[in-house]
Length: 308
Image (cartoon, rainbow, N blue to C red; front, side):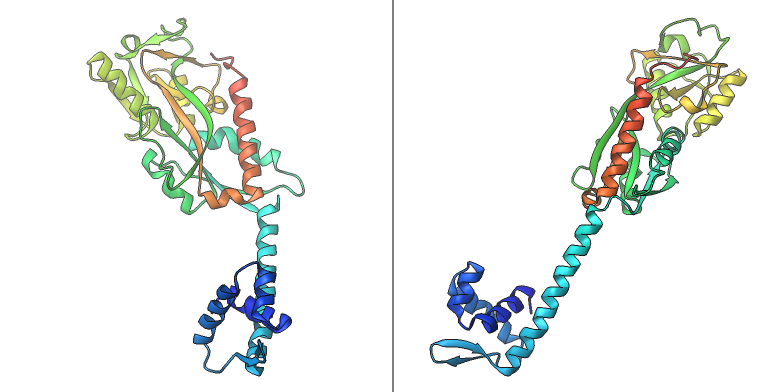
């Protein structure tokens, strides 16, 4: 029993002939008759009877038509409700972000949306290996993810991708380091340093693997830490150098650290918002996307920090 079949039965009760129903619904009379036949197969009592040249409803048919009208009305209410839900700027939006994105974006996002009628964001930190970000879209409306330029693209058949930034990872040095006076650095400049870097599978570790490959030397990795605030603190204390993202690490930088671009190696990562396509049909979700894009654009346009 289909909704459109109940609609046809209802129209037959109102209009009194298959021809009139077909004209109203802009279909052929044979299509109307076929749907009525399919509906009749699911009901044990006759729904229609011949009256002269017209086909009219039996008492059972009228009862079903009346019930069908209630179903059609309820469906219309449901469509209206979901339309209002999709079009409403308010409502909760769940957002996950890896650590450095959270440090840079979450507080400005909360401030920007702290007003009546704005979406209510529910924030979580999820710092996973690059290949695991798409799966997070099953738990969150929006997932802020990152991947290196040379890594596999996001699965576009499963998730929508909204670009946020194309961010370099720079070498973080103590301000009094012998290399701090240089404008740029090469792999040969830093390959012999003691390093703090991320665990394998994360962006900084990928860049350092490239440094080792270009230099044909084994690196001295002293610490494996994913949290950039801890990395920044260790670099500032002296004894190690690290890699920090140029824009999103801004909240953890201090005058004891300088950032220098690393040339000759691909160091850029793509920061994207991943979402299931159906979630982007909600106005509240698109508003949060637009806010994140505005905040990230502001970070990039600020240019180098004073510590650089």
